[in-house]
Structures are given as structure tokens and as C-alpha cells.
Length: 227
Image (cartoon, rainbow, N blue to C red; front, side, top):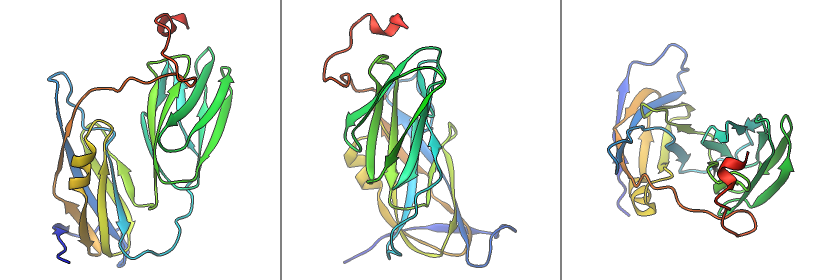
């Protein structure tokens, strides 16, 4: 079967890299549907070794904070088996749940200053909401590899401590189509040292999807301003 490899541009090795390490840098350019949107943040880029070396260990506990009626950060990437803590830092109750794809769970109603924790065991995307505040949403992407990064507003990413070898590169973005994300997937070959991946371009619909509360019902029009 014919295989295609994304070109890697090698640069001078950084002093903190060992002879067997590789560090890859890159940039994601998000083309937005609306003129008012311009950020390149919250895109996940990951590299999975084509030759499996066994299961990947869970990462340390990650926090998805509830503050100012928002989840912070909006997007989280973790390895399978990692626990995520959901602390409530607002002066009122939250009711965090997920019933859309990924891992379904219901943390129930809990007060300011408290926290709940969930282990994300299976790879996939989980969309997180609050059953009280419809404007709150986040995404947790669980991966089979420890080699991943989430872009900032400038679209830049870096993935380090890579053993040289062949990898599958994949990308996820909340507002991109599944077909485009699948088309961006490709094989890459990475050598020791520091290298760069050519700019990844994708398109955003800029449209948040409507969702129901945890009971499968529409939110009351008054809920947004109630607390």
C-alpha cells in the first residue's frame, strides 16, 4: 500500500534534547466562517506511534474549573485512564454532566467550593455541560498516546520527548467537519532533534450546536439569568 509522509524540516538540536529525543513544532491556521472570529486556539494535534509499544499510562489529575459560568479551559486532551477534577469556583451551584458521545456521567448538583472527579477510561470525545447554565460547555478528548498538544490563540503547538520513528498525525477541532479532520490525518516520519511540521489549515463553522439538559429536555428561557 502506498504511504505518504509529511515532510519534517530539521533544525539545530536544542541543548535540552538527548540524542534519542525529538521535538516537533507546528502551527494550525483556522479559517473562520464569520469575520468576527479569528482565534486558532483549542485545536488538538497528536502523534500516535505506528508500531504499538503497549498501553499508555494515565496522566496526572487535570482540572476543569467552573468559574464565571464557564468551563476553564474550554478544551482538554488527556491519555486514557486520566482523572479530571471539576471544582466549582462560582458562588452558586453547578450540575455537570455529559451524555453526548465519549464518557456519559452525571456529577449531580454541588455547591461552591466543592469538587467532583471522574476517570476518563476510553478514547473519544466527551462534550461537557451544566444542566443549570446552558451557556457552559467544554470538550474532553481522550487519546491513546502521550504525544499531543493543544494550540493557543496563535495556533502554535509543540510536542516533545518523541522517540524517532513513524507516527500517525491526527487533528481535532470542535467546529471542523469530521471529513476534513479525517483528510488531515497522515503518516509522518520523525528524526532525532528538533523539527517542524508544515502549517495545518482547517475550516471552522463557528456554530455551536444546541444541546439539551441532562434530562433530555430543552433549557428554560429564564435559566441563563437565574443565577
